[in-house]
Image (cartoon, rainbow, N blue to C red; front, top):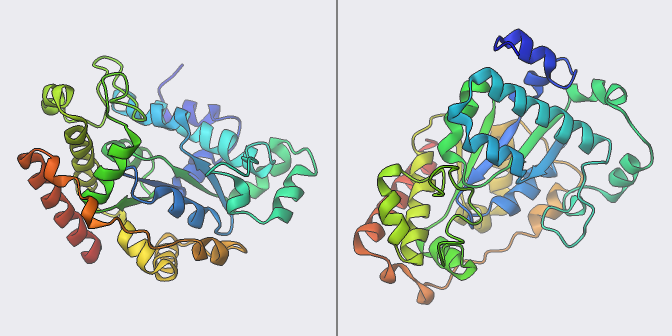
Length: 311
């Protein structure tokens, strides 16, 4: 297969303008336990948005992104975004109809709209004209280190990165047991195919991460996710504190930044956001190695300053 842009563009699932659809998309990422799921539902409720919740294939694609050419990366990403995400969502095939799931379509879409999409069978050709209005929204935590691949392929794509104070995140990660043992220390983070270590990890920290305590691993993870976001210009930072303190203001601000308009369910979705700040009496930072703890605190201070100044 030729590596030329023309050849890859022509092969993208037979849909003209597939790269343009992907280029006007929104990626929602950030550290786990910082509000990506609740914010995802808010943005997913906006008009003309089609939503994908943590698609494993795109996480894998971003993980290996630096080893791919721009054209091959775009070929795979655009094909998924147009065919698997956008077309299938519009046709009803790609909607999660499990009411109990965090990503359930019923949590951000009107039931009538869901019924309408399920009331007929629609092909790519039936829906091709609708793609001109679609805004793909993809939520994938932990891929901040791979934003360069995305911006190289799609210069106009919009990126939102969430953040939160280290005490709350590290405590929550510890309770989840994400880094409790060797078998799980990359779970739910995808590991590098050669080292088995998380792809977001600085190689210089590989040895220390491997022998670190679960709390130190969680703190290293926290530092990586927040620090990497400061390396990029033009992304939108939104802290968990701002989101839960004034959900209406935060949602209105972010939708304006992204050029989105509220949908029929937006107000009701926003109204479900509650201020659930962590009790400082349960702070776990005192159990984190002192050098890592200080780095985590300094990283959060820098992240918060960047949020205030608009990065």
